[in-house]
Image (cartoon, rainbow, N blue to C red; front, side, top):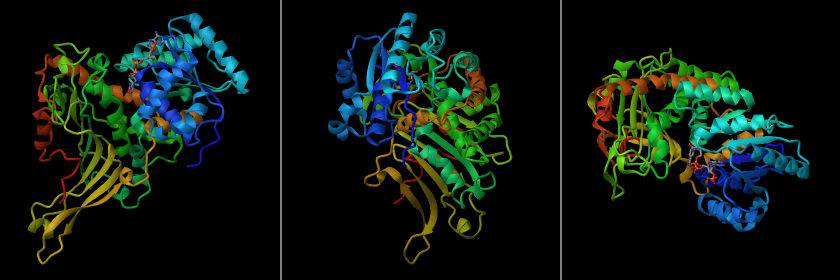
Amino acid sequence: MAPDRLDNSLLVIFGGTGDLARRKLYPALFNLFVDGFLPPALGVIAVGRCGFTRDSFRQEILLPSLETFSRRAASLDAYFEPFATRLHYFRTDIYDPEGYTRLGQFLVELEEAAGSRGNRIFYLAVTPEHFGPVIRSLKETGLVPARGWQRVVIEKPFGHDLPSATELNRQLREAFSEEEIYRIDHYLGKEMIQNIMVIRFANTFFEPVWNNKYIDHVQITSAETVGMENRGGYYDRAGALRDMVQNHLLQLVTLVAMEPPASLATEAIRDEKVKVLRSLKPLDAAAVSKNAIRGQYGAGEIDGQMVPPYRQEKEVAPDSTTETFVALKLFIDNFRWAGVPFYLRTGKRLPLKVTEIILQFKSLPDILYFKEYGELRPNLLVIRVQPLEGVYVQLNAKRPGNNNYIVPIRLDFCQNCEVGVNSPEAYERLLYDVMRGDPTLFTRWDEVEAAWKFVDPISAAWAAQGQPQFPNYAAGQWGPPAAQRLLICDARRWWEENGAESIS
Ligand code: NAP
């Protein structure tokens, strides 16, 4: 891809010393720099409370971040110095109004030195309780409106429920227009997620069968083997439903289920996505009991190592009732999808790190081969999002030989197995899109709102059900037994082992 010509701008990162900035943002910016995708005079200002000098910030934060997390670390010798000249450290407390005045003066100085038009991006890489106060201060102290264009990037979680999300949105809208707000859902920056629309709408043989006539059901799994790492405090207040389902998993549902947009314009795509969310069949309390399974991990074994239970993780309450696993069965009430179950599951401390989408096709009638060989496997389309990136189709074919043995085979495209393919990180694409002003891969407010409207009744029903029997799965298992039953009761099963059957 040839880089677009980008306007010069300043990128102010609130939380410039934090985990997200170090693990994702600086490496992504560096990779973009090495690949020639940054505007010629982008300035990056990391904001934090610690007393770094510009040089100590580069040596103690920036360099280790790039050495550890950049996929272009081999280019550091050649590119670190020119990249580092773009970075500045600004010390202030985000609750200090005078700090914003100083920051404003600093930005003007940088803009004048660069001869730029005063375009500003504010990245809120701070924990959510700070979102509102930072936005308010930006406005009250005159950092916005900027002289040129202005954009704000806001990390997840976007609220805790619909009322808190609505309030956060109200605060944002006092300082920024909807077009200037970039709500990050980093799943949307992943290569294979962007590929879903291409697979669907650029291939003649998928679109005609992409409906309830041919598709039996859809499975979406986003599984992690890790526990809380350093996020126990946040996670214990959020849980898997809010942390994963409300945003990432429902966004995947929209991309699988949306109608073809009228064009590839941002709003045309977002319009179709939001229609999917609005068509989700609401789950009432009875449906939640049946179709929304929650779990919390106990002690268990991951990769041959014993790991502690969730309730013993750092910053987690010893009697926590927070779910670390969710499995859901949902339906989309529209002509294309009526009657097709979408099974979603996500969790921590599961046996595999894998994100994938599986469409299982309906079996043919019980005649010919299906009559003779009752155990024929269904056709599957598997979209692998991570860690493997690719797509494969599972078919039935004759095994070579004198007998008519039918075996499943795969037409398999593994993108990141190809030598020399080093896929860009999600944050590279997302930061690039913010700089060029393309919000297609970010969530619009009405999408966030519709997702909360679907998720809030599930949280409410769980709260009303009272104390769950936690822990109810051992680390290293695929969630509680009820998650398996969710499909077994429908005469289906989760495709495990990296998706479909292992094929000899
Ligand atoms: P973090 O490691 O706790 O970092 C928080 C940052 O906020 C630090 O740079 C801290 O700076 C700064 N900060 C806190 N209070 C401040 C204050 N009063 N004044 C100035 N700066 C202050 O958090 P994080 O993990 O990076 O997460 C940031 C956001 O990204 C959160 O919304 C999180 O949900 C989201 N997110 C994170 C990840 C991830 O992988 N970490 C992934 C997805 C989303 P000092 O302490 O140096 O002052």
